[in-house]
Length: 338
Ligand SMILES: Cc1ncc(COP(=O)(O)O)c(C=O)c1O
Image (cartoon, rainbow, N blue to C red):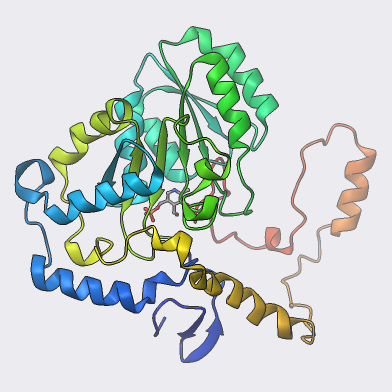
């Protein structure tokens, strides 16, 4: 990339339309944020020089946490280095060896790693399926000291929204702690305040994890929720053992997150990109790519026919030309990764 992340970008000297960043509201290049970041460097320097529990908690961090808590309408918020770190901080703080976690099958990699770190038993339910969630929770919850139900809010790979209201009902029936990672819902759903507001679950959901690296346009993670439960437990290890991002990367004071909900002009980033794509796309004729061939193997349709006639081969298999070459990535198992 040879330009800032924006709707249009320059990549290897070519101007291209960008569909692959999370700068949903165009804030990564917003003049107000850039100026506030410059001011923050002038006033606070470029690094806190200590972990937060010693001498690294600057007034800037505290103010940001207060604003984030107010924005989410919760008791407290903890600002951490990234969304990834937020899941590592909060999940092991709340559940341990004697506990279990009910986790959507497509939850993000950072949730999965947080679950592993906690040493709680992770039990996966079908993606986006409250009935399966109910079944799995009802069968297992009695065997553990404490249980937590975790889902992504908006699943970034497919863009679908978790049925959070239904998950909350399941959790409520069985006494589970509720947690959602709303990395992709913030700034977009619920008037910008995220999926919990979208479903009217304010005050009911225990923990919201978020990131400032998507719609907020900067870098950092958030744990927001009930103080006694989530925040103070998460603070224990996190505040003692790792420094916060230096102020220039902290969302500047001049840009309270609440500008999201008011400043709908920001939405032009997402919609502008879509329009810029849709307008000319109908006129493009796409030529068939020259995929590598594997002459000795049966064709896709022959394989499909043989599978249909053979009841034993029930496993669905992708019929992609890329199966004939070495895949560039290991096959995805449980997580989406964006
Ligand atoms: C659901 C989800 N959680 C957490 C993260 C990690 O966020 P960050 O980039 O701030 O570490 C991502 C980003 O890819 C995500 O999609």
